[in-house]
Image (tube, rainbow, N blue to C red; front, side, top):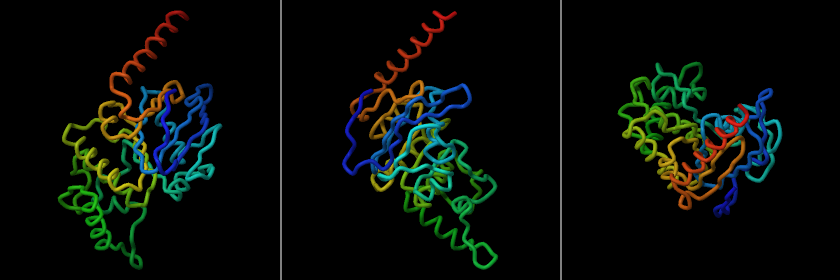
Length: 261
């Protein structure tokens, strides 16, 4: 594995020797991953490599069978998603966990609604959502419209903005650019670039598109057969190198299958 020194500021998250099994299947064999403060890390790998499993462990949805997590220098055993969120870790998955029938501002405050007595404080939530989206440069015509009326890129931006507004310091994004057209991809790339410029948030992005990952990420990790097999600064690798590694692994797997047939 090729490794690079951590950027100044130290690590905000480290996963050390993480193992996860599902019955007889080992999803993660021995994963070592680190995320620097203010860094955007791209987590790449083929389907079934274990990327989503690792993300679920990092956000408290699942627990590892072995290994440890270190958050801001302290070892932590994440008990739940709520526990992870209390430590500033939040995840945005492909399904986004948005409710299509609700307005943009109601989705921004989902499960964190403001109330006055027994009534929802809609005006306060509306005004705050509008202010927050404007500050993040997210162009939504109205926060009163249902999210079902928005484009895929706009819905993804709302989900990311909700996590940032909830004071997430470590943001985990599962395929934020999947199944989007060029215009929608540009919305999310611009948002992520803005978050990088602001600083204060460390991000892990699961991605399949190597070119997009190299454009937005500071560093790249490649996850193969349950381990991180490459750890490089984005400027020190390329789409060609990443493709060559994956193709070589595929060829080895095919040769092994042929020998065992």
